[in-house]
Length: 80
Image (cartoon, rainbow, N blue to C red; front, side):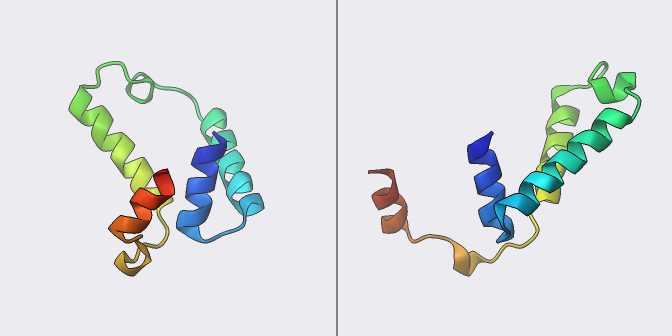
């Protein structure tokens, strides 16, 4: 979980406190809504589930610029 929060923090270029607060706020909102069969995943195909997960991930990305990506050599250096 810590790695996921750090990844979101870097993606948003925000401080960790704001990211954690946002994650908690979203989690509490999800807990306060009534579960339905559709939301629980019953009757969902894999394709529908994957589309829903992709939408959720895309909503988390606030800003993206190709110029922010690491160079290939930097990525390989980071893993060692």
